[in-house]
Image (cartoon, rainbow, N blue to C red; front, top):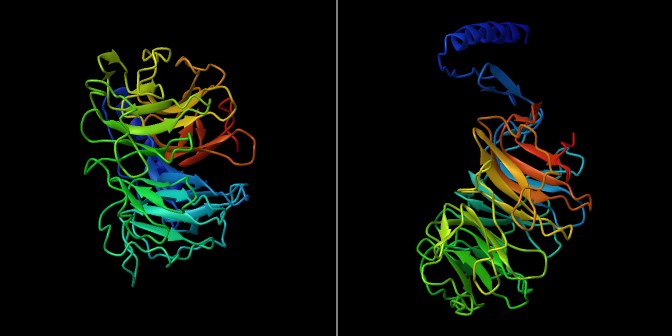
Length: 392
């Protein structure tokens, strides 16, 4: 370790000299002990050791009353303890060692809790599982073992990037396509969408209809589907809809039935909408939601998280110069200055997902690939209060 520190000190002096000469440099950092990961932070090689040793792509609160948190990503260790790709953390941030998915999965990218109270989770991505036909999506039991009663057979032989449990009590799940799978993983042949592709984001409507909102890969880039998959023509997207892709959809929590959308778009039916918009429940543009993009930019935002405190606010992924951050917006689209992120994440860091804690605190988790938040060393997963303060 002393040798490593001396090496980094010498490297720091060398880089400082180059920086003084206005030379842009990057270094490939050496490997470390098992569970360690040395990364280039712009001026020196720093050690990630406080959490996951590599990026976290998706998180999901356990819905079994435990207040635990599931995570998937590229990691192979947590605080130097071996845990590959899938982990469950206790509410205090420690690793739940009773959850063990083994090493049979490869490259999971999304994790979503089942809503039946079992504590089970769905995992999706480029999956493979030893001695099984499981691919694309799997269901894991509370202890991390494979739930073999859920099996898609040969129906899905591709990456699954979106998983959404149906809210009609059936136990079914939607996956991108869009496709609806029965509770046992078989294809629901009665669900027939009016288009053959899309569904990068799927969100159930909250009006009890069983309808879902889905993103599409062609204009108008958004649709509302009835529970049989047909397009709900009562949701009118106008003559053109959005002018580019929608990456995330979230239903407002104020009882209005409105929806928020993030994406690469800059307009909706001729109205300015720079990466973040709110549509009324009939599909019309909500002109009362106006986002100021002079400081933060929302093009290609990865998540929208509506506040659950009754305020009508939302948390959203944004960029600011070199930083990728999470900001809180008031219900009119203005920045909520009560949520203070300071410098945000380190300049080459990125946020990939956010979720609420389930302990009633109002705190949020943010996951991604980062080493600092507001100049404080953190690693790939943090917990923030409703005012933006880091919870250690």
